[in-house]
Image (spheres, rainbow, N blue to C red):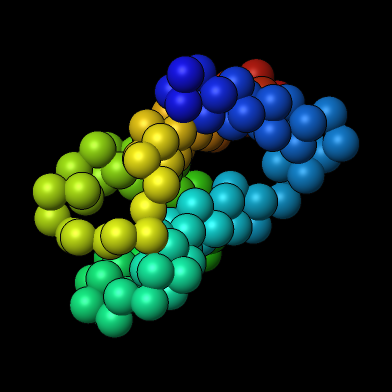
Length: 135
């Protein structure tokens, strides 16, 4: 169920962003990547686990750097970052002991991230086709 809810929520957010024009701004999906990557720090802080917070902050810093690079140079980096975070959601439990993470969260977050990445890829491909046909 967490996979389905995460996927549907990501699709809903992407559709809403497209309808109101939020996804026209380069910052939208980069900000999404920053936010989804920060939740594990929140969970570590809520659990009061300093070792988890340090480890999660190092991982967060990598995704933050990818979001900034993607914002500045190519949104394809942001799409790759979202997809990579989705994959990392599946692996991180074996790498980082974070007692604050709800049991359902990695599945929810993984599906959200992968669907958000797919939506951004679709948007980028669509934009490039529109530009190509206009030229």
